Amino acid sequence: VQLQASGGGLVQAGGSLRLSCAASGRTFSNYAMGWFRQAPGKEREFVAYILWSGDSTYYADSVKGRFTISRDNAKKTLYLQMNSLKPEDTAVYYCAARARSRNLMDPTSYDYWGQGTLVTVSS
Image (cartoon, rainbow, N blue to C red; front, side):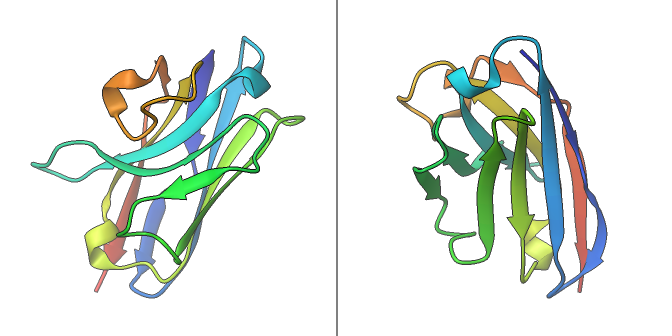
């Protein structure tokens, strides 16, 4: 499956952004999906994941209550709604797909990755 992330940009602290990840190729609904981020000089870290049907989600503590992951299987698109953004949310955000439902917080478990979209939050 090919993934294309978009929606990043520059936003002030407290603002919102919605990231999208468009999938093509294999059946999107067969994959669990995740969002990860990587700040300069840091390792890639887990943000959120969502299972195939969209009824099961999980978030990193750092974004819980502020970010919402969702998916539209008919449109083959994954979303990340980010509210109350903080400067520490600044990073390149990546979407990823995994054919199995285990180890979804581990970036090394994912089968496919998008190219990343930059989110910059100014203070």
